[in-house]
Image 1 (cartoon, rainbow, N blue to C red):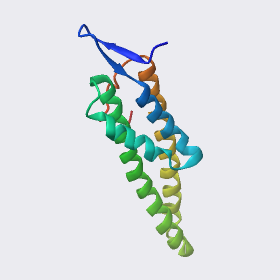
Image 2: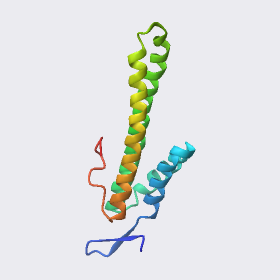
Image 3: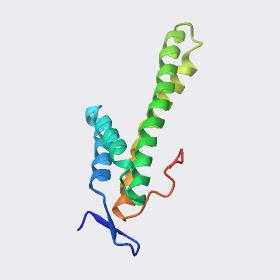
Image 4: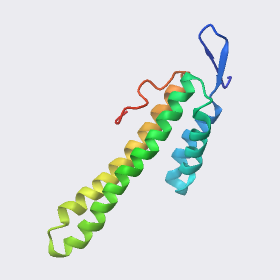
Length: 134
């Protein structure tokens, strides 16, 4: 099995090794907590020189990172303030919502990475790299 993807009739080939490495590093974040940053650096470093298929994956990886960070901050703030205000019972719904958002973001992150790997394994560009959901 080759790591190169043929593009159209131009004969140009795209190496899909680094996008795969980035996706795997993203998924390893659940075990280590910091490998996502290495994957992000790889995506930023290679997006400008990548062909159209791999560029879509790098764009998808970069957006996945930043959307995850944004939603994790929102969820974390809700947990923080909900925890403080739960002492007077007003913050309990915010605390629960924060925990729900944090859990949902983790699942969403994993699903996006697996979908990206699936498209990559089929030698396809990610069809909607700028989409919020999938």
